[in-house]
Length: 187
Length: 226
Image (cartoon, rainbow over all chains, first blue to last red; front, side, top):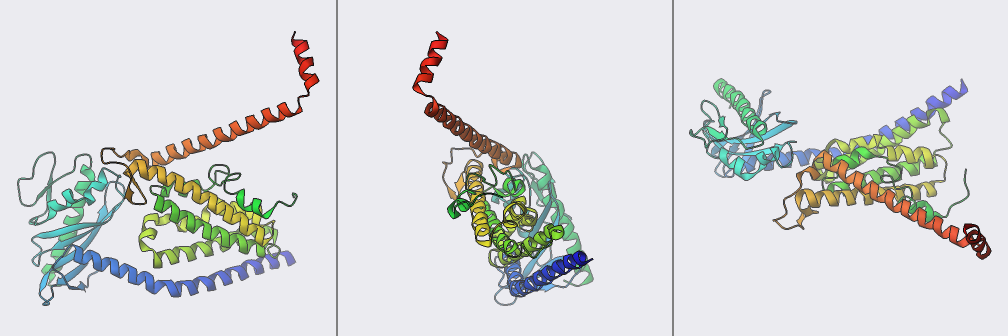
């Protein structure tokens, strides 16, 4: 019995000390971590809206989307975060959209775990540049093995078809939600 | 348990004699997973060494207070505390690195090197010796990860620490930054380490035989041969 009490007491003391220490460290680290995340989001928002100078978050439970303004407080468009499954894991994309959501300004891949050298080509300029000025109506489409014919088409990467298709699908699903918000007048 | 070893030995043995990767073969998961570049390997090894040193020091200091039956549980709580501290500090101060290492920082908790050293060394030795032992093992881990990261980064993406070292004409071996490349590199390095040890052992044996072979014995042997 004495042994059991000794065991419980030792573990309790260690646990309490560890917990106290961690809460102290967390108090110090948490504001910094939040600031880091905010800085990263900000950087990504302006990356896809080069004319942007300030932004405000649009309140929505469906999608993460930001309204971006230029230096004269004129709205220049939206920065939309959408994510979904790629070939191996989650892909998170920031898409810059025009004010009426009809055109993509630019896209940026924020997170991905695609195959190095193949799927990761979606993060490179030749692929991303295809989205510059791309029309989003009625939706973005992809073509494989030939040059795009329409203004809403991109060409998939050889050897990374699934990753390319995933990027298109993720942006489309984000667009759908953004349009639903727009129809409700929330954007 | 054993005779007193010199303090220098407690540190140096971790570098090679009981190198965590090449000799003890512990902590394989982070070794294989994060060594796609030198920087990742370095950061991982530093985080692990931090946890290893402080948990060894603490565990060794309180080793006599912990009842034997709950020692593993107590060790894990101590280790987990230091890992969480390392994780939070990295997230706060080095967000890029923390992102690159992903889930492998929290997973240091279950890194066998740390629990292994706690159980095999820190729970039986004085805090100072445990500190040296942990530092030595951490350095050994660091050396191994940097070598692996260096090989994989150089062949897989032509760079070292982000600077290009191989010419553009060299087509990067993509396999080196895929998981298969990690296994190949680790296997070859371990093979090399074992080959070297074997060779050294054999030459030491030869020396010993030469030393104790008396001249008359040699003659005797020769005579028998004839």
